Amino acid sequence: MMNKRLKAGLIRLYKDNQKMRFTLGTLTLVFICILLLITATFSEININIGDYIKFGYVPQIPVLLFIAALLAPEWALITVILYIILGLTPWFPVFALGGGPSYILQYNFGYILAYIFSVIICSHKFKNKPSFEDIILGVLYGVLIIHIIGIIYMAILALIKHESFEFIFNWIYYQSIIKLLFDIVISFVTVLIAMVLRKILWVVFA
Image (tube, rainbow, N blue to C red; front, side, top):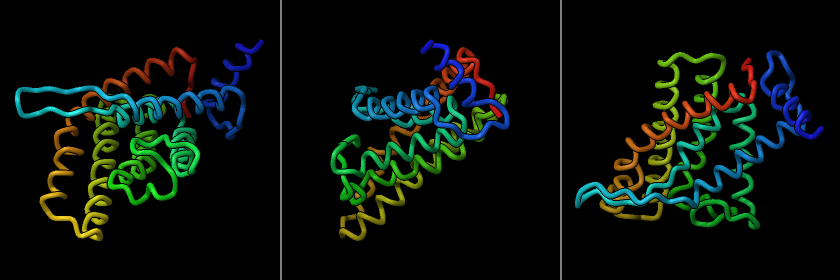
C-alpha cells in the first residue's frame, strides 16, 4: 500500500498540467534530495594531480545539478530554498562551515546563494526530453552561474573587510579556478544519471 502511494506521488509530481501537491511521494523525494545536498557538503574527495594541484573536492555542485535534472523545476527550487533556510537557522549546521544567520558573512555563502539561480535555469533546460545540446548548456550555465556569483559575493565581502588582493586571488584560485573543470565534468555525469533515474521512476516531465 505504501509503495503504491509513493509511486502515485512520484508520477503525479511530474505529470503534465498537474498542480503542485505535497503528497507523500513529493515530500519523500524532496527530503531525499535535501539529504543528498547535506551529504555532499561533508563528503570530500582528495584530488592529486602532479605536484602542484592538490585539493579536497566537495561534490555539492554536481549533486545540485543532479537534483535539477531529476525534479520538476518548481520542486527543484523548493528543495534548494528549504536547504538554504535550514542552514540559516541556528539549529541545523548543514553548511560546510556551520550555519545560522551569521553565515551570510562567510565568504563561501555566495556560492550557496547562487544555487537558487542555477537550479532555476538548469531545471528548465533539463525538463521534457532535453537534447544533448540542452544538457551540455544546462551543465555549463549551472556551474558557471554558481562560480561567478560566488566569486562576486566573496570579492565584495573581502573588500568590505579590507582583505588584500592577494588573498582574494588565492581564494578564487583554490575555490573556483582549479575546481571548475571537475564541477563541469562530474555534473555532466550526474545529470545523465538523473535522466536515467527519472525514467526508471516512470516520470513524465511537463
